Image 1 (tube, rainbow, N blue to C red):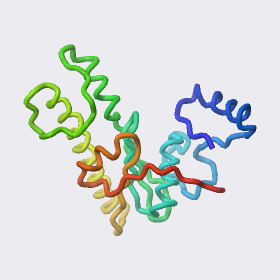
Image 2 (image 1 turned 180 degrees about the horizontal axis):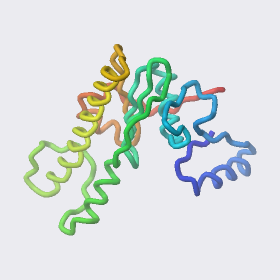
Image 3 (image 1 turned 135 degrees about the horizontal axis):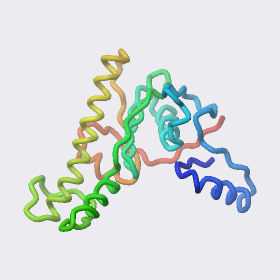
Length: 192
């Protein structure tokens, strides 16, 4: 199964599967029988990565669930108790936004993404690290809390959603987050 969000590379992945694995791969897309219903205005606009996150989360945790994926973008995918993909949020990813900051601000420099010792930095490196990490945590907790409120008020969801973190920086951010309950980086098998 290929889950690609880089269209120019998708045919290359398909050819590699055919040539080296002797398999005709299945591409993840919105109209596969995945066990969830996509309620997006235009389901074809939901990225394969977000679909895969939603299917895995619903399969493992049921619903309602919010998946926070910390990758190139930080995405929030919301799945109802009935397995409906309600939609979500797309924000710039931690590395994406911090690299742009370093590129555009001449006197700032790249720092390693690790937990700051404290919030108030006493030098540029500590200040950058604090802003990047705690800024991301604040963004995630703020958005998750807004999603929870909307689920309660507009969707009449009574059950508290599970909040699952995934992606490259999920462990680091989840340790600081008040809303991410579990980090799950495990690949999921799916049969249809």
